[in-house]
Image (cartoon, rainbow, N blue to C red; front, side, top):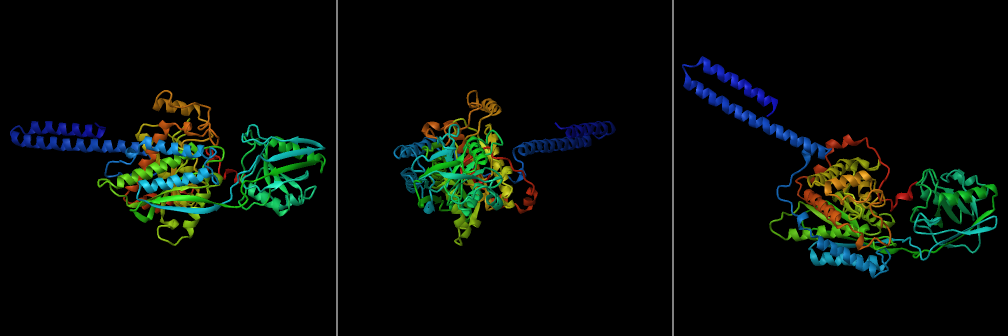
Length: 586
């Protein structure tokens, strides 16, 4: 009982004693008054207890939701989508992706028969198991894969060294840059060291030797790789070598840097040690350092790559929920976690929803749901970028960017040393349109609320646009999603917290990356943590159903009265999935 209720009780009790003493001659009247006071007391206590309970409930909600929990809509019927997804079906999808990869040189990368077979499987399965409207859209891509390992040989004062190429940054001295052009030097070519970091015309105009018909050596820093390579082309360099700057321990090895798709210059990325060695030798004796380079691309012209989308036949097409995942792997492996896990989860959501919509007891959603499988994510989010660009220019109702309410993204959900990672809306890039921030933060809280209700641990993960939600978010579309971790290490605190909440042994291994097979040949069907994967799919189903049943989703995601509150935002350095176009920027 609260202090207020207790005080009321004592007051009433004293009043009853006074009445009894002063009105002995009127016992009936006193009895009536006593009964009335007891009734008032009872009602007062009931009201106060209810207020107290509601206050505690509101406090609990405040812990779960940072952005006005009063606006969280409670679905009027039982939730069934998560319960209708069967893991044996989901694993059968992953097994089919593995079978496809195994039959096609262990890859499902764009430009391979493995990728094309993946698209055919998704398309055919949706056709056979849903009544959704399925659209397959082709767009041109210039694949960056090489036909063979590149060659890089240096000559310093006549001493030649054949440098090491490897897929491993621990052993590689050099690596090709995405969108490098092919080249095959017949003879050694002199290098010229570009002063500063090669970001200004003046850097290229004040060299000891002219960059024209020479190989430019440029240190990483300040501007993007795209800008450096554009200046190399402008000053007619035969090739560009960009080397790491060594400013921190994690800026010494090779990285997979990305240039513009229309780049015209052969380009390699060198370790800090190798780049510094070449630069110092060339500065001591200009003209004494030369290199021999061979780069042969597998594709010299564009190829068609497919996006597949499937729309529910009901729901308002001008208010669309987009659920996306990418269907391609990297060339190095089958890509069963990255991103077979997201593709299979997306397929499971679509099929389960189609199955429920066929039952008379499951209410249709007010909103159209569009499930999409993007192509060419691994080479720069090209499928989702293409889709967003087309929608931005479309005037067809249902195909316009303005018809999209939200994008849910699922890219890696089954990491073996997993976290239950939730995209943190507060880490959106500073240039994210303001209109997308409130809803994105509410999605963060909505996912978090599910994990809390299930008594499961959870973690925030970076939300700065490095997966297929990025193009949507950049255009002001609310976005959110889940991520089980890639090449960052699980901390001891995370292991202990997950062990405490899930049980001993379920917390994983500290100081080991979330997915030790990330972008490797071992990203196979054995690379999935089924327990963690199941929980992530259930969370995805919960959020989709919650949004689908919302009475006024547009207002909930885009409350104009609150947008002004998010003008001040912080940006966190990326700590998660580091591929795609991450290294397009210095």
